[in-house]
Image 1 (tube, helix red, strand yellow):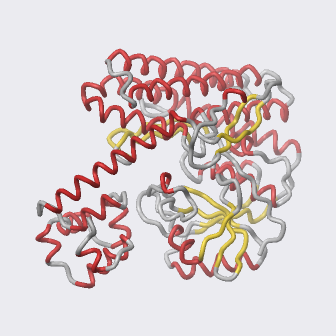
Image 2 (cartoon, rainbow over the protein chains, first blue to last red):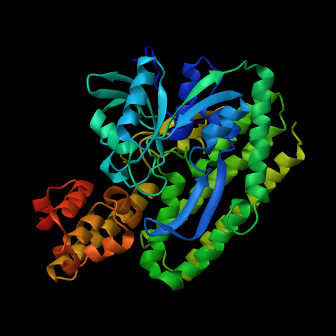
Image 3 (cartoon, rainbow over the protein chains, first blue to last red):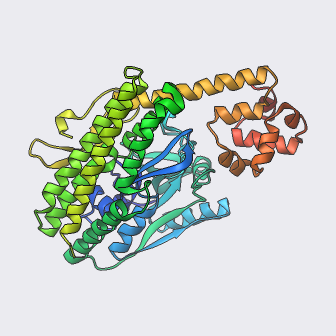
Amino acid sequence: MVKDFKHIQTAHCENGVITSLLKHQGLDFMTEPLAFGMGAGLFYLHVPFLKFSGGPAISFRAMPGGIFKRTCNSLNIELDRRKFKNELKAEQFLDEKIKEGIPVGCQVGAYHLTYFPKEYRFHFNAHNLIVYGKEGDNYLISDPVMEEVTTLSSHDLNKVRFSQGMLAPKGHLYYPKKIGKIDKTTIQKAIISGINRNIIYMLKAPGPIIGVTGIKGTAKKIRTWRDKLGPRKAGLYLGQIVRMQEEIGTGGGGFRFLYAAFLEQAADHLQDDRLMPISDQFTKAGDMWRTSAVQMAGIYKGRLTEQKDFDDNADILNEISAIEKNAFQQLAKLKLK
Amino acid sequence: MKKKDLPQDKGFIKEICYVKNSEGKYESDLSTGWDVKKEALDNAWDDINQQIEEAKKAIAAGEKSPIYYYFVKTLMDYQVLAGYTGFWKCSIKKHMTPKGFSKLSDKKLAKYAKAFDVSIDELKNPKI
């Protein structure tokens, strides 16, 4: 049992696990926007040919696990992370850590997560939670997207740690093992490396599937959906984009508000006001993503049905792509070192 | 997004969102839900429920086996079911036909029953 574990609700599960675990280790400066930005979390990806739940496979954030790894790396924090073949060994290792008083992060599948609302229980394997104790057969769980702490029986926890399918967690467990000296300069360096890495992700990736050109790629596809898929399926496809963009964990606007909040905090840590107008641009991008969602909802509710409505939507996405491109180019021009 | 514009519609859980307060600074705030995304989720569930209804008809018509019905009902894809049962995708496809299903041993049936969280009896005679 870990004494005095403080539950923190965050927008996104992975940021939340980082923030809580590092705060627990005494790193009081850590916030969700900082964890997200240091980990270069902002992203856009539209995987061609791949379907997820029968719709387009789109992501607004970096690959699961990546944010945690990069944030810890940039702060010189040594991580212990392991996966298991054997379910019993996975449970034993978890029990050991809890006995030692170490709260740990676990990757889990959402489908069998008993405390989740039924509506959100899909076979999605990249959810993260913290186990911070055990009472009898029940593990004490701090799930960052929930308001309060909760519990899972050993049977139920085992089930979600060994859920199957794409990105199967295989008992994946992680915690900060060794934290070196972290001072003002370390934090500044971590912020700058996060920003510079994110510039590369969003601007420099080749092909029309990643980053700002990926957003344009989606826009181009949307123009064809009405004719190619028919109104019903096209509506479901658009609904899937809205879900990826706004469902639990994004902080709204496909993580763009979270990134704007990060730049605001970065301006403070770096004592650099030039970041503020750029933060405003990400706020604008987030607002426009939400405008786009409202427009898409018009289509999947059947209120908007014309090709022009699909074109209008594609136009909004092109505009967003231009705003984000400009914002990252301005970040690049600052040449932060 | 401004704090005063944060939607407070009907949803499933209260979620954290990042919003600008009256001083123009970012802070986190709770949102009870947003109709736009609830409708997207409702639509997705309508589609799933429709697929379940179609699976029921396919079973009644003798076109598919109960494996297919539970597969649709539990929202699985082949990778998920292959992971839980250890069967290859092509075998699973065979087991989804009434003929392939009738040849399954009790041991194999038990694997499917466990994956779908039902008894072998329920697996053989789904309550449709």
